[in-house]
Amino acid sequence: MGSTYKRDPEFGVPEEFGGIVTPEYIRPTDEFRTTDEMNGDHWEIKKQKKKGGFISMLKRSSIAAFVAVAVVANLVYSSFGFDLLGFDLFSEEGSPIFFEEPHDHHFDPDRDYPDGAFPELDNQDPNGTVEEYGAVDEEYILLDGENGHAVVYMNPSRDPGDRQGTVPEGVSYDRDTNTLTLNNVDGGHLDVNLMGNGFKLKLVGKNTLRSITVWGFHYGGSMLITGRGQLTVSDPDGEYEYGILLNAESSGSVLMIDSRAKVDIYGEQAAVKVSGSTVAQGIWYLSSMSEGRRQFYGTSDSEGNTVYDTDIVGTDGEPLTHVKFG
Image 1: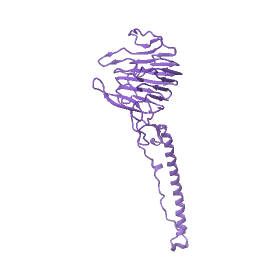
Image 2 (image 1 turned 45 degrees about the horizontal axis):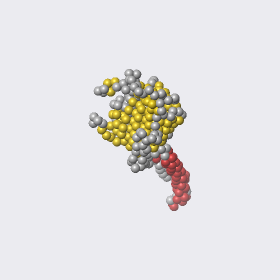
Image 3 (image 1 turned 180 degrees about the vertical axis):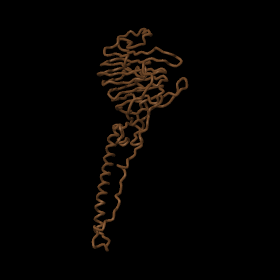
Image 4 (image 1 turned 60 degrees about the vertical axis):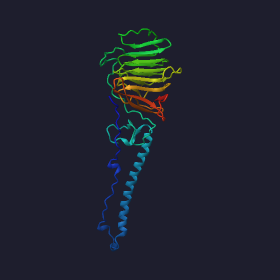
């Protein structure tokens, strides 16, 4: 599965707004003529031309004013990530088109623009069948904290072993919607495995985690961060290299951040990284990003298949250790 990038429509001005039509010149009729016809009817003809010229000038001035307002408005709107001049004023959608790829107009190589929508992904449910492996049955959600390794959810056929920690108050999982909710939680490391591409992390209130790792293993391990709450991912001890690490493991998995969620991410080596995804663009967001831009590149997995890594890098091309969304 590849990226859903689409280049914006080429800008074109409809004739009604861009074409200045010069009024056809009509020679004055006889009733406009004077007895000075031998002198070329200069006064009357000039009077007619002046009248026509004024109307033409008025039309041209109106068009020029319209174009000027449109250009200024476009500069303002483009600062928010969409192109006012890049969509049809009379389209059924009636809404600006977000930049989904470096745009031909006003392109800033050091700026990243929000996505218009999230990609459509297969394998939404937890677990599933993996070619050559069958049903893996290894889906789980673990949260490490002061009380040890707590099992939030695990495939019933699996033995939790020594993971006998207590799930912190405010943490809950809904299997029907595949949603993990954090409600004012101060937790440790969140470990999510094979929960499918429909897995959601819902934020309520203010939450903190030390780090997040998500695994996909040839099936699906996406994460959509949603809700109206806040999440700070920070590890003061530097035990974890990444704030959020999504190991797609040759699956079509991505990280998605909804427009309502506010996420502040720190990492020792990088704030966010998506590794080994069959989707070219591994990070998607709908609101705003504090700085940097997404950079993705192709590589190969252990079987020689093309997969992609996505980083958020600064102006120097190096991964950022702090990124804030929303």
